Length: 99
Image 1 (tube, rainbow, N blue to C red):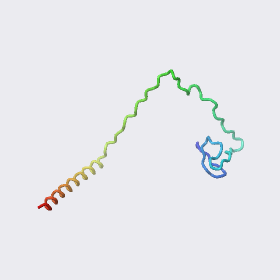
Image 2 (spheres, helix red, strand yellow):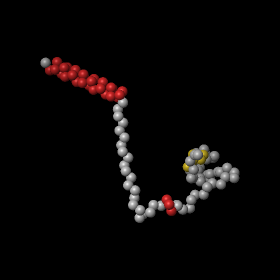
Image 3 (cartoon, rainbow, N blue to C red):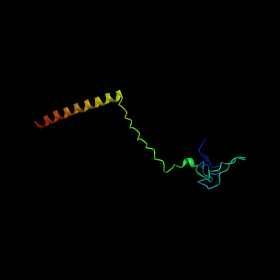
Image 4 (cartoon, rainbow, N blue to C red):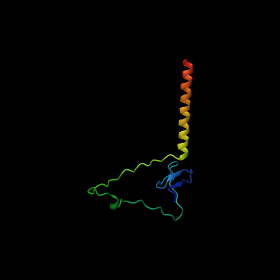
């Protein structure tokens, strides 16, 4: 069941609770014989929390950590090795240039 309706005049999409189109301001048209449900007049008393009752302590959700996959570990190892090789090459080049 959709929570929206399409205006037959301007084809804009509107929220189901809207009785008029937000774009062209024309009233919502219902099929013949359809009676739209009335909105509730009051909030049921069961939905209102009792201020005398202690508030429920909600625990914070535990964080979820993803472990790296084997492919990611291999890629990480290869990148570290490449950086070490480049570092060694830079040290050798610096030593040659300083002589």
